[in-house]
Length: 214
Image (cartoon, rainbow, N blue to C red; front, side, top):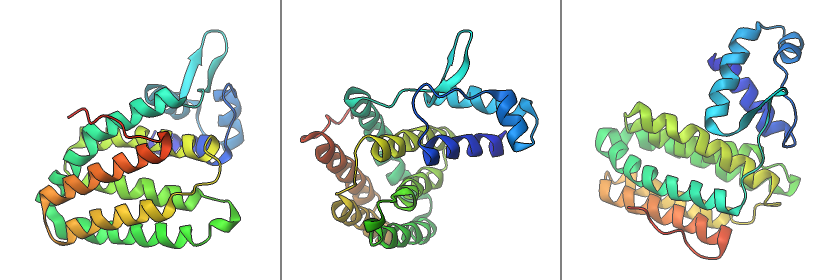
C-alpha cells in the first residue's frame, strides 16, 4: 500500500490535478498494471488526509484546495506539532539529525537558485523533507504520521494557489537557524527556531502571524 500511496500522492501533487478530478480505481490499476486492492487502500488513506474525497455514486475525486481559513488551521496544527518535534529530535540524537537536515538544506538552496524555471517541485520536496526528517527523528510514529499530510497540503497550496514562491531567502535563513540549533545540540533553541520559522511562513502568507496554540 505504501508504494501505491506514494504514487497517488505524487500524481496529485506533481500533475496538479484539478479539484474534482475522478480517481477511478479500475482505470488507474489498468494504466499502472497493478492490482486494484492496494489502490483502494491507498485512496482510503488519502481520504483521511483530506487530499481526496469520496463522493456518493462517483467514487474518489481530488479534494478542493485549501482556502485561506484551511491554511491558517493547517499552520496552527504545525505550530502544535513541529516545535515540540524539533526539541524531541534534538534530545534524541542531535548529531544524526543535523546530518540529514544539512543535506535537505543543501537541496533547498540549490533548487532555490534554479527558480527562474518556475518549477518549484524540487524546492518544495526538499522543504517538506526537512520538516519530515525532524518529525521522524523525534521518535514518535504518530507525530511523524501527522506531518506527512500536513506537508502534502502545504506543497499543493503553495504550488497551485500562491503563484511564484518569493520567500525562499527568508525560508532558507529560518531553516539555517534551525540547523544551527541542531548543530549546537540546543533543544530549546531548536524548538524556538522552528516556532519562529512557522510564524514567519504564516506572516508571509497572511500578512500577520497565526496565534500559537501552545
